[in-house]
Length: 272
Image: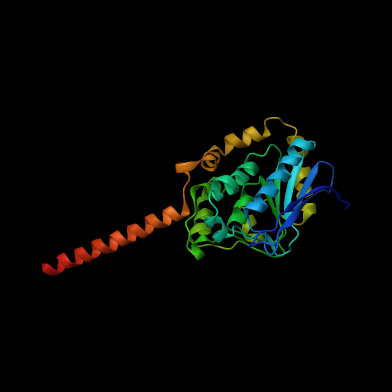
């Protein structure tokens, strides 16, 4: 199947990442395939997020309405999530870079499909969930929210999309067990809409008449209303933004206060 490149967006090199690029091709008319390459594992850095936002803007404002598919040219990874150290050390990263990207996909005025070609962990899984549909190639990789494993809280703007789009027991297993879903398990859990390669995504577009849906002027507004709880959390600014470091500080204080209380309680008990 021939694909014509429409444009490409560079991902600039930074001190901690080698950069890369995002290419937009058209496997069929009005289907926009965004393929990113940001070695080694497509981390959601400020440079990556900015490039992807630019690509979405070019499609919306420079091309006819259609369907957007995202995937990776790195076979092992769709996206391995945030560079946590970079994210926590970059002022305003969440509210100015990551959350606007999630919101853009969540309310994008055309249908969006994540073509998951490999691991989608943490923020990478979140990015996929902010698409309308997901197809998993099934040959390799897992979907996983693994914050439990590296000991950081799941912020409300991150967790809300799972709460909205999954059933309670799947949400529990995902967050409190850091369960890894392969393609078959993900399909059974309702996390994906099919298993296959690009042809499966194109088939989904045809079967659901998504190109026709893309012509509706209300498409993005309908999604904004459907997911208004997530939209509100993603839009929060300033003091209303939940901070991972503040949550961790609050938890540390809670445990310190609890240890102090227990020591005093134990001492009082010994006097009896």
